[in-house]
Image (cartoon, rainbow, N blue to C red; front, side):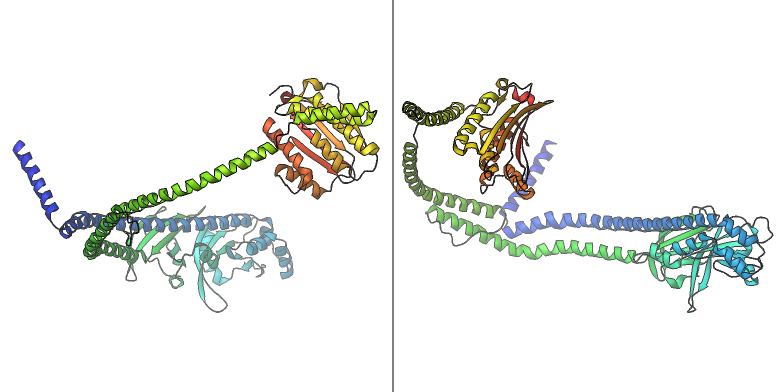
Length: 608
């Protein structure tokens, strides 16, 4: 066993050495045969056989599906016609016309006109071509749907059969149009029992042939439909009307089914036949569905598959010679490029194109060369950027020096000016400076803080309004309404949140007011919500302007001076309390504007 293993191993090594020592053309041809021709031949035979089988099964399924489609449509139509016949058979108005001995034709017509169901079914149902009632009552004249059954009619097989049995049956009936062209209709025939009378009556409902063509006609499949052993009453080929079925059928089998290949008109066809027992009837409809092109189609597709397989085997052999020289030239191009790069010559005159390993190696070489060039350029740019950075740093240091004015210095300066005004006896100026300093002190104290108490924030707003009253005099008054249950010293709010809203109300809401202006701040609690309303009785806004303002609060509009402060407040509220719609604006032209801040009460009692 060991000797046999060594021999096999030696043989494999010999074959491998012979392959390596052979020329590139021999290697490629050997690979071409082993890796391409042999597998494709084996796989191709299997694929052709399997494709032929799948296509055949696919067309069988389609043929069966179309047969089922025709069965469903016929069942739907015939069932509908049967239900109509059921209504008409026991219609009291029809019974009255059939059993009455009419003195005049006019009297009979008057009774017939009082039967709306006949006209309704005749004109409103597309599947019904004609609805007729035949009777041997000689006093019934041909009027509308009523017909006197003369001797010719009474000799018809379907009439005699209908009179002799009570069950419903279906028959094909040949008719002629006004041009003398013959056509066939599937007809429901049933006896109408005329109560309290010896007269006979037969109901005939003709199914429209054009309606059947519209519903079940198909361009791809041929159809032939017959009832019992009668001739064909519907066919996609009108020349087959009145003839027998093109395929043998085992009549009498209630659920007959056949599927197979059959030669029809010198063509091999796929045929599917099924039986449809009619609803509430002993009649059976036989449906034949045919496809005459499928055999030829399958043969053509199989031939195309064989040609494709042959092309896949032969075409690579044509290109194998070309590929050998092409492959060698690409290797030579790569070798020359690498030699140039080793000599620091980075301008390649040729390139290896493609997406295989050789082209990837050449791409890597190009990337390496490009990086070397970029590093050289980067070192130069780094020196330039270093100088620019130094210049910018010096500029920033200058700006910082220019902006180093201590806000506390401004507050102390204001206090000094206030004391001098007070000493000089100008108490009003001293009071104004004191209020301004108090406002500045509030801003300084709350810079960097997250929250403050509501009473401090309201005090800042009162101080601001007092300063504005010094400016505007008696142009407006201010009112603060804090409802019972609100404890401002225990409520925490973002600092500097109310003053910009009040400022908007003074500068924009009351700008057209000469006197009588009011600024009202209303603080209250409703259930679990805390509200602050800032309201003015100024000019208000039109609906369109209000919409723009509301929009600018959500998306900043730097072109609107009114909305920048409100936008900032809305953003601060959203960031701190989460969610949106903490700030709402209500306004009516000529009546003023109200800004409402809404919070969860629980959030206002906790310092966050």
